[in-house]
Amino acid sequence: MKKYALVTGGSRGIGRAISLRLARMGMPVLINYQSNKAAAQEVLEMIESAGGEACLMPFDVSVEAEVSEAVDRWEAAHPDDYISCLVNNAGIRRDNLMFMMPEKDWHDVIDVTLNGFYYVTRKLLPKMMQRRHGGRIVNITSLSGLKGMPGQTNYSAAKAALIGATKALAQETATRGVTVNAVAPGFIESDMTKDLPQDELKKLVPMNRFGRPEEVADLVAFLCSDSAGYITGEVININGGLYS
Ligand code: NAP
Image 1 (cartoon, rainbow, N blue to C red):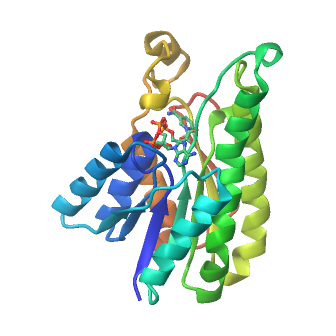
Image 2 (image 1 turned 90 degrees about the horizontal axis):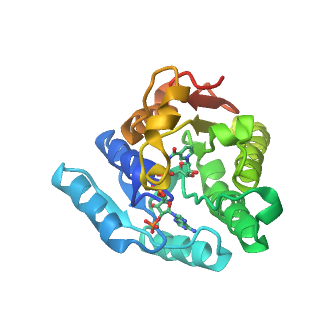
């Protein structure tokens, strides 16, 4: 039996760094992405050339049928293996002041972050709970979900909901040895933040810089490791001292 990690949005940014880091830890990694196959393929090649194991698993986390079908297909091809580690990382931003926010932008952000978490996690949970082999779920939330950020009511709402879900689910799965934690990054360098005025914003950060995806990945890797078996229901900030 082989234990796999699934990283949603593993093709770029933070998810890409997490995929690479978990592979370096010795886990075979399923790299999920929505549309950017070239980026996902690059992650796959980086893992394989470093001697690790990975494969691509494209689906839109916000479409239940796609999630279900992709996981069913993988399980049919891997009857002896299971996904013991899930990192719910896929996310999008559609920023706007609330009074101008189109309904679609509200729903799209909730659909990817919150409903995506629900579809993927619910699909994998039964096997994780049955196997009692130290399942791990890490949800990538945000400083926005804790503090609230103007211009991000949709994103802040989705990320705050993910924190509530993390705390509730952690209590449901604890007796089966499945831990559920959240990681809340501040400003991290990635495609998601490349249009932000970094020079201005970094002045707000006590460490005077944006974080790197690899720094988030190190924290996620620890939460996915055996060493973190007694940590559950936590929200861990990683924000250079910006907020706690
Ligand atoms: P990013 O560079 O924009 O990458 C987003 C990733 O999510 C891509 O791999 C993308 O896949 C995938 N994705 C988007 N929608 C998807 C969907 N419907 N189904 C499947 N995959 C989907 O973002 P990032 O900065 O790495 O952010 C990663 C996570 O960290 C997000 O949840 C974000 O909210 C959170 N976060 C980021 C920051 C920050 O400062 N960067 C701060 C706090 C929290 P494709 O390549 O196929 O498009």
